[in-house]
Image 1 (tube, helix red, strand yellow):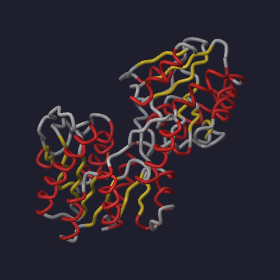
Image 2 (tube, rainbow, N blue to C red; image 1 turned 120 degrees about the vertical axis):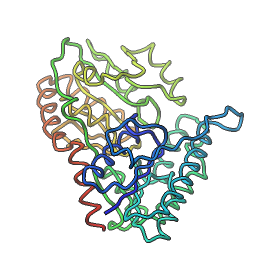
Image 3 (cartoon, rainbow, N blue to C red; image 1 turned 90 degrees about the horizontal axis):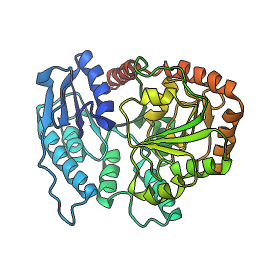
Image 4 (cartoon, rainbow, N blue to C red; image 1 turned 90 degrees about the vertical axis):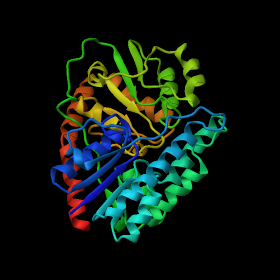
Length: 373
């Protein structure tokens, strides 16, 4: 079997690149990797003759070329380059959504089995949820370019299979009329050696949020819940960059609650160990890796089904409805009043997440490849 895998991001440098690396590593280990095509120079432990690094022109700052348009043009350039490399043939082509329309068409012409990786919910579901949030907060921006949405939809139509990371994403495609046989559900993984529980060194009830601080992530509902709870000896810690749509909200709350902000950190495990509970009330995700990290560090997690979480409600933490401040207050208060449950559910979370290593993720992907070929 020969697989060509393409991702429009540097491998191992965060985001989809890091996730893609775990897939590529498994494919390479089984000697199925013909080529991995990526953007930029990636320092990875793979057979060098199997890596194709594509370099693109530096972004030119022009009035009409904002970040969204730049990424669209970059992905377009990447896609055309990948298409040309597919002419040498393979058994499976695996590309990422919004980055592989021309490549899919070329693969189909050559009888290659095609898989599209979708790391968020169906593009129309994603746009609906984000637009609802924007309307609530009076934001008139469009979440995505129409041309990108159209490309995503065309890729769904052409692909033989669509790979998704969570039941939430899977359901979003089923509700749009997709055949279950076209969908591949493989949960993500986590490095359980790196992320481990540790001793908390103070008695502050610390509520932790990690990820981009934005409307899409539901941080606005956590801030409101924490403000209304007025818990003594407590603190809300936000770790992540502040989105443009959230700056005004953030400034309003930082003066009213015990709030700390860390723009980002490479030592998330230490931050988790000094926290009491992880709260991630996301409106829309694929499968948020921050939930995996928190569980691996032994934290109970309060999150939403829409976050694509592996949390078992009532065992590892709680699942709450999106946009539900009262539910957030209730579950945060539950842990505040029951410190013994923080430890018990945190232990459960750690034990459960040990079933979701990157090695397991890779093995599941290989089994899928072997089945569909």
